[in-house]
Image (cartoon, rainbow, N blue to C red):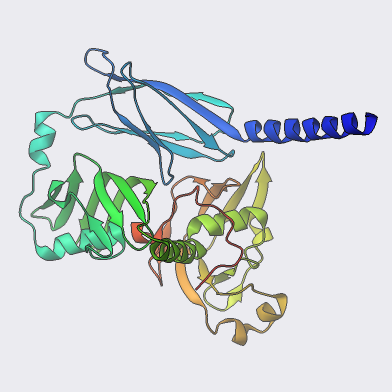
Amino acid sequence: MRLLNTFWKSICVCLLITITQTLLAQQVVTGRITDATDGTPVVDASIFVTNTTIRTTSDASGNYSFIVQGRGSFEIVVSHVGYRSAFHKIVMPQDAHQYNVALEIVELEEITVSASGNYRRSDVNLFWRMILGETPSRRGMEVLNAEKVYFYLNIDSVLKVSCREPVEIINHHTGYRIRYVLQSFEHDYRTGETVFGGSASFEELVPSNSREKSRWDKERRKVYAVSLNRFFRALYREDIHKEGFLLTRGIKEPVNIKDFLQADSGVIVVTIEAPLLLTYYAMPITDKMIKNVRNIFSGYEKLIEFKPQQIRVFPNGTYENLLSTVTVGKYIGGLSSRVPIDYPENTQNIEE
């Protein structure tokens, strides 16, 4: 009898520890969405966490709540047709957050300015390549409300693009429905510089059969393998080589990541003083490979170049501050090359 009681006590203690650890790893967000003009509640406003599957809507009183797993940073986006979208960055993890939003109505002048003006087919193609990573198609990245996106090319050869509601996208490659809130987009044809910003919400689609599910799972693993989220998670753990990533100066001088990492209250501060090239291999990188430089640069894939900057990285792969990068190889900035941040990290055996 004593043995039985001891057994059940042990089980209860284990469960209590597990539950406590789970609760400590959560961040609860609550708030209320109202109209900035008269203070009335805004019903059915969309509230989501950028680049995740976390999404909810406001109720009849304008209230909402959701839970974010982990202790990373995240961005909250609130949108509703007829209102200007609101964005709020959480950079200091804590158990509970209160975020109330008074949404401002989109003025008539803004609607007029956002109407499409003089533009070309090449302008449209450029925009979608930057946002999606590829040209829209019914079998690839399908855009459901492309007619809601407005283009304007001014006399200074600057292309401006806007959309007054989330862009609805179906990623047939990976099986996600994506809602993309475009903040701004400008491309200067004189300098070739593109500046844009936006936030994406992901929702898993239901596969029609096991074959489609298997194909989606495989594509998600492939996308995650070379994603910045996976790289930053590995960087936080200081095992990027195990995950197949390599940072170099130029293309033939591997760097020691410990030289530019510093721990700071649960995050790591990454200080980059000179451009660093990020490459990816389909296998773990060993010390022997690094010593033999000629062999290490066979079969690699160039991704991006990090410009001099400082980045604060959290355990879940999120980061504080905007990234300053240049695409030098495979473009991993488009929505077709993303999976949500809360994508399961049980991907030890990445399929190619």
